[in-house]
Image (cartoon, rainbow, N blue to C red; front, side):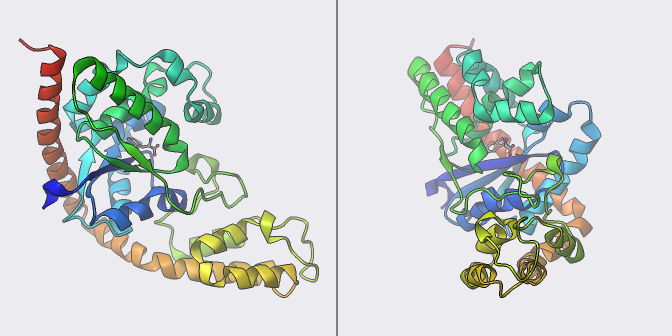
Length: 330
Ligand code: TRP
């Protein structure tokens, strides 16, 4: 059965718990596709070191947090394979081979690298940070993944992966699968402060693990149309963060809310309360599942160990073929 299915590999850096930006950008798609695809979820603990090399104890706990977030949203542990990046030797080896054919300019001009470097305040990038899209290419290709569900910030990386794979296959006659990005149909979720991106580094995120009261509080503090100084004047939903959230999480009511806002028939407080209620109803089952895994960390650990072992089998086999083609044998 499994052999006939196409494969997904996607994942997250293990630098903390996941938020609704991750959910909308990729996690939801993972859940929707898990029956159709043989799904691998990578816990990217090596990539986490690109920004958190001086804080490794945070990464260890985050491996569990990220796995639990993925399980909480509804990935079925009997179907998906959890892979701990640092445990997969073939990823590290492939990274080195790929690094011979990717150029520094290709990496330097990557728009996501540029934005992230700016957000983190880096001026002199480490080799590992600049090169993480190369290691990400190894993440995706060690198991010949076909599809990579990701948020739009990751698209430049997948484009680079495709270039690397094509060049590599051309050079050595290998048949590594050229992966394709799969974007969510909702697009990017903005931060609660109206910032274009929700991010854990930006203090504007709702986490999947936030309790209902915290979610409600965050929604109540979100930025709306700043020109609407009184409930009596019409609002402009087009510039309102809360309205963008209604469109994503409350599509059934969003048209109605839009026209009520424009006609000054609903105030921001009532509008936010409606949103928080709807969101809490969506996230309640997710919190319940998360709670189960928080109480059963040993199960989470076993899943990661077994998944990584399976991934190593696949990666080692593929790497042996690749090395043969490259003539790095004896
Ligand atoms: N770069 C991704 C992120 O920051 C995480 C990641 C690592 C990833 N390896 C991957 C995503 C492979 C997709 C495929 O979220």
